[in-house]
Length: 156
Image 1 (cartoon, rainbow, N blue to C red):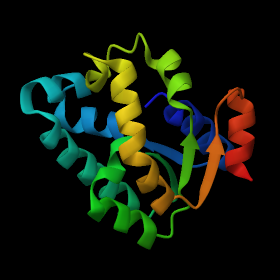
Image 2 (image 1 turned 120 degrees about the vertical axis):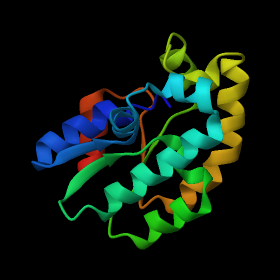
Image 3 (image 1 turned 45 degrees about the horizontal axis):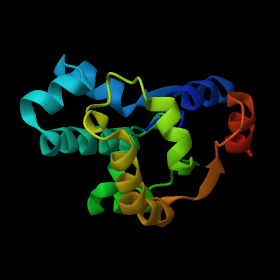
């Protein structure tokens, strides 16, 4: 959340001549609701199920693409297994929680950060960091780098 996956994904997809599948956008298209609306009406677990379906559909798509998967996909073991077993190259855009806090402070579409952004980001890091390591083929730090520098690192 806030690492730049949508922006970097869009540029990487353009450079590779592939389409971008952004899991959050796909969920919003499929449901006709925003991520915030889904969280508010149905809860996090319902959103995670939609997130899993979006990831699995994107991985199964025969057309080569760039997938900007929401950071929460690693929370489900089945998703981690699908990422590892796929022929996809999984790139983790790594950002320090303090950098993320600066980036997402005013993000109205981030319902998980409503009550305690700093504490939530730190808890998310503590929970997800080993899971990201489990699935990542490459790790690209985004801290103190321009978008173009991140894109170039992803494409290496």
